[in-house]
Length: 446
Ligand code: UD1
Ligand code: CA
Image (cartoon, rainbow, N blue to C red; front, side, top):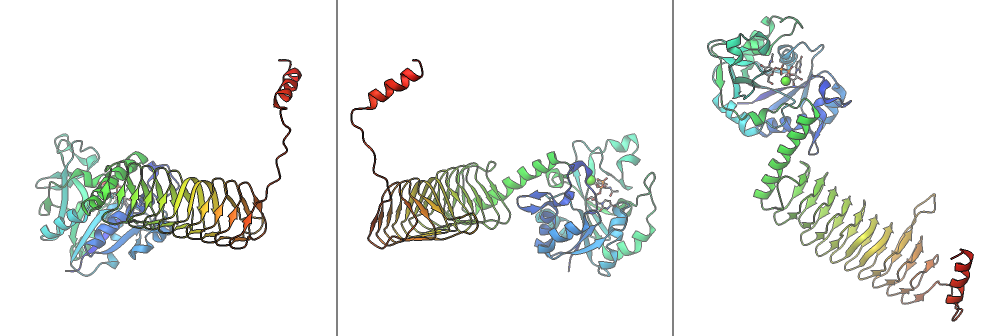
């Protein structure tokens, strides 16, 4: 039977103390409400999201999920919120209702509710160690809101989770009859849960962690991180630990990949190789057999089999490190291909460049790619040797197999197999250093 779901996300969320809509706060690269929408879509549900505050931002953030929206004109409680979606519901059939700020709810738990549903209404309940604030499940009555509880009812620990399954026809028939509650004149969805409604108990309280402030956001993030990591580990990815590694929901990992402690992987990254401690990867592809060593930061880069990057390297967009190439410590690479086996092992900036196969880039080499107005390209041929501390003023080409002497500042092309040295001869005054030191000492009075 086709499933419909209504996600209530019209609330303001003032306790987040943030200009961002509460339900849009990011959790592992996905807006909070995206997690519940994804879980519902995993079950095949047609999802309707009820919006009001930050409506435009919520619509935009959920565009990738292709949900439908219902606008709650002036939010007047959970009954009013579902009422605003009623015209989008089918004539009959199961309708899941849930809140947009419980991102830990899983498809497995929602499926349990769907499978158990009988009659017009089923509610998911759990046992809260501290039930304050929740509606209580009162046998023979239904749900009694915290504010309306008698002292005896207040002690009941079985509470309303806010996840329900209604029959659409029942909602259509009963929602118009809801009566407002003082003092805010709210319409409560919980009034549709009566003595004959089915209560499905013993859901896990963890899944209903409501995110209302930044502390709960951090808590939810920690739980999701562990859940995501555990699933990848079960699929054959080697995790040094499950807590201190963060992998966004947008990332793809491959069996055989390994991630050390402190690694953060975000965006459209795909990792199949080894990533050392405290690396940050965004929109980056690490092929099988590639290694990124400790403390490296990669954004928009690709590292091929047998290549080694870092420790402490920085790859920026367009860095393409081909098979067997090396990029060592304190090297920055942007919009540059290092072809097979090329090496830049220390202290180098390579920007807008093409480094030929097997070329060796000495420590301190800089491609001077920017003249203050435009960027220019540097091309270095296969097997070329660039001596330490060379400045290559682009546009410039160094031919295959050429040698550039250390300390050169080059502004013209070097042909293949040529030797280029740009270096003023040293001035030597023999046996004079000690005399010079005495002069300095006298001047400083020592
Ligand atoms: C609600 C339930 C309570 C349950 C608890 C579980 C009611 C009357 N009470 O209480 O029994 O134990 O959830 O967390 O339903 N929303 C709208 N439009 C509105 C009002 C709310 O979209 O006009 C959304 C909120 O953004 C939120 C959700 O509905 O995502 C729940 O609303 P909230 O005001 O937090 O209800 P509770 O008081 O927590
Ligand atoms: Ca709430």
